[in-house]
Image 1: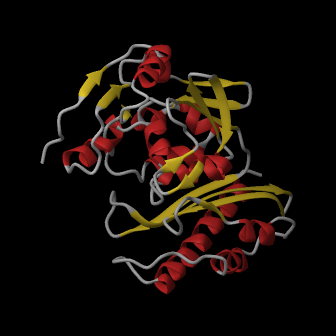
Image 2: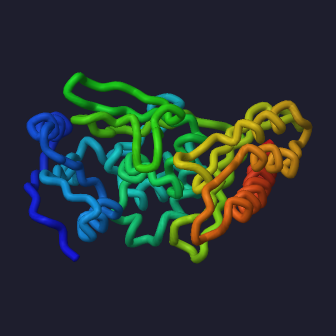
Length: 287
């Protein structure tokens, strides 16, 4: 399969890209990041944009830097670059670990951090990581720039707070102390996960002072496991099993070819426990 005809543009600045989106506001214009999701959809004609705006020549969107205690990742930063960037390893090791689960190296060499988050696949790793890390997403459009918290960014499957004529430019992640873990269950490595768990846990002595846990693959968007967080915070050493049970009790994933609702919930419970235990262990090792 090949895509139907479309008009192609390759701007070299964010301003030019936004202007192109505005100029084609009445058409079905789409932006192209790494192309790992959009191009297959176009080839199968599940997506048929009339105008394709390629962001790969916009150098200002590719950087990875730190600003005080905030990690700033350009939306067009390659996943492989973020996976191995020392800034990411220091400020957001959870992100670095999760990137190792994204498909395979050739895909990560082309795929972008912002592209994955903006695509908002409910089974993808990076949206759940953004949620667990309390990331902020910078969106630019004709009316200027605005910042949206990850908790408000994901609106539904493949649907985000990015409006018509807007594009994602930066991912901003506050530096977090403590232990982290990303675990997932997939049929084979590199395929879409059935369930993924991202966790960050901070300790004050032996007591959990902060917990942030997010899941992928269990709902139409990534979700925070707030019930698990409530069980953990204030507990001595943390009870991973009780926290996993509390989170699983609030889940109702849709059944599909990978398993029934009950099966997916059981998988989520198991991987929640694994992720929490690993994050707790790493937090204890850092003391």
